[in-house]
Image 1: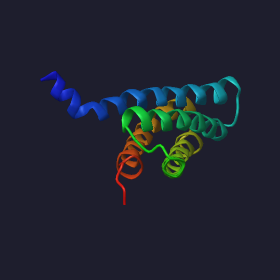
Image 2: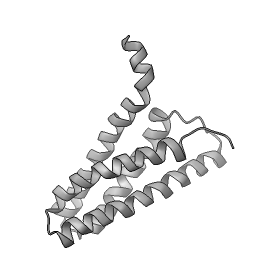
Image 3: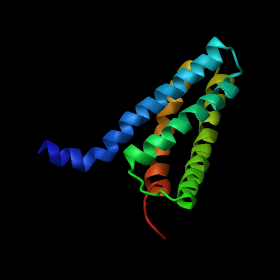
Amino acid sequence: MLTKLWHQYKGVIAYLFFGVLTTVINIAAFYLFGTVFSLYYQLANVIAWLLSVLFAFFTNKVWVFGSKYTNAKDFMSEMGKFFFYRGLSLVVDALIMYLGVSVLLLDKNLTKLADQIVVVILNYFFSKFLIFNNKKK
């Protein structure tokens, strides 16, 4: 029974595990650059995004979606799609941060925590259906 559940939900469990690690990297980097080093919150957000996306690409490719593309062309295509769609989620992330911090005057770190919920859901959709679907067209 447990084996059946594991095989049925392995991808979701792996995504949640590495998604949590990616989110921790994003939030920790945002805090480090935005609070400790006092960078402008949107700059800290972009740096945090870059670090977490690099981590997420390789963990998603290998352990979450089990992508088997190994030649350079397919690898670059996959990476390009990954960064493109993560760039779209960065736009959503930046908008949420702007609304929370600059418009509603909320704490930047609390806003970052809340915005990560939306970003994680969006990124899962992009990764599952548009990037690592392993379908040859």
